[in-house]
Image 1: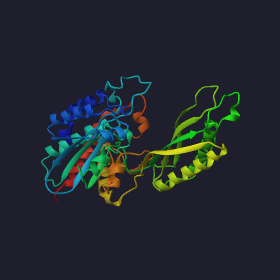
Image 2: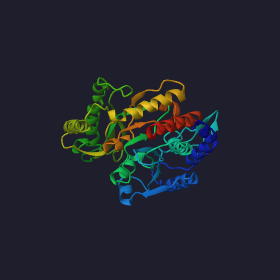
Image 3: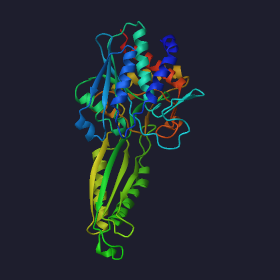
Image 4: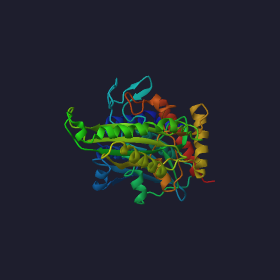
Length: 403
């Protein structure tokens, strides 16, 4: 398989460049066109591609414009089904780029572009790992499915979550997009809450005749920020996870400089370590907000959940998959590769929620910082792309080997 993949490196890089050059920003999340382009590229590789458009009402409800999920199924006989999931939607480029975010320029062995590392790279690695398996002539039993979805940046509910809920796929094991120097078997959960604080407007000359929504919001924010040192004392037992985190990421409100604000809205992000109970975390935050708003009589706070992503916890049923990936990656990457946790949250949780053991592995450097993930000049070393593909091909061959 190594010889086959070496001969395919230029074609694999060109495939990835085509994915990067086609925008699929989410938001706004108008991703059906990118999915169709990807499907045609996959068909050009000889794959049979299932297109699964997501119903428009679900797309709209999840804050997107269009989404089509792609499924490739390659059967090698009776046996376990292994799903490989990567997402084609990306965060918008933002400012500060020195390279065209849609240019896929290759400089000193690094390809630059939005989504090149997270996670259009693994659309390529998973596709070529499967091609290598098909060309190997090995005696195999089972099925490999490629799940290429388009809503990870919106939460994954209409991507892998929808494929599993609808019974379109029923895998026995899964691998999700990741980086090349670690096998991720645990990650944080995430809770997004929107808090709307309401009061009553008044002229700034007589503020006492109104109910200041910003003053009430300040009391709530003070109580929330006071949780940070408390959370810092709680550290996960899983390497790589760290402590819970709380961030106020968005806030707006008010009418004018000379008017007492009658409404303030803000959103918070609470990262939850695997040891925490998400329902309990949410209940505690709601109670804290309800208590804090009482500091301003007459003010009210309405709390709406935007997202509650469950943590991914290590699963003993995925141990063989983890061991094989670590074994092959340590040889191919030239250094010891171990299982670890990460403080992010991913689509892996959707597979775990359906009882599917899953770990994360794919193409990328040692850290998201080295990849410039979700920031300007996102990049991927093409050597990591090629080597991660080799690791995945060996791992799939071992998992499906007839012994």
